[in-house]
Length: 263
Ligand SMILES: [Zn+2]
Image (cartoon, rainbow, N blue to C red; front, side, top):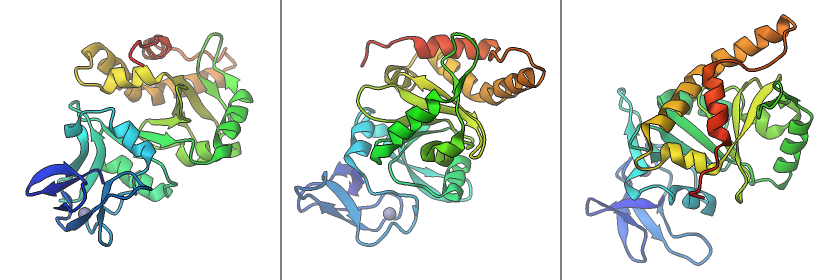
């Protein structure tokens, strides 16, 4: 972890410091070597948060884009269950950065634990993932003329198979300056709805002082996407042209195609 409690204060790891885990209160060791980014480690495992994943540079780079007070926030449910959210924004969005493979049942537990959760998945962990994803995407069908949404088949792509079908929004990060890819909807052995999403716009939504306008567009779209996709599918079944309709989607499309100057 990046932060532990040292005399009750959140601090980053430094040689010879000792701290406590903010979730389980057990002693943590400052690991300050040359190979890995400096971090805090439990002597064993965190006894409270079984979801905690060892951090990579990728995690650190993402978390570091947000204010320190939003990073590694202990979240406690009504039943007393505790987890450490990678980032929790002032608007209550929890952003989880997932590097390693996650089992479907654990993922569903997290979808259920956080009421407003966004996943960012490291698509660059395996070299083949990006090529496989792009190939499958190119073989997919675009939704109507001029749409950024494409519908590939998930079963031909490991990362889609793993991440489609959850209740929280999922963004795949293939690294660099490339757009993120939003897996909007779909099923593991059927079609997936996928759209590019500029990194800059992701920060516009979640940054400090994000405008109400962008937050509303995002939140509305997250809430509406299931209905929009069902509508599209019934249009297709009726042999109408498969344009994704609805004001929410149009708003999203124009929002996603804006280029932010921030990045
Ligand atoms: Zn702990």
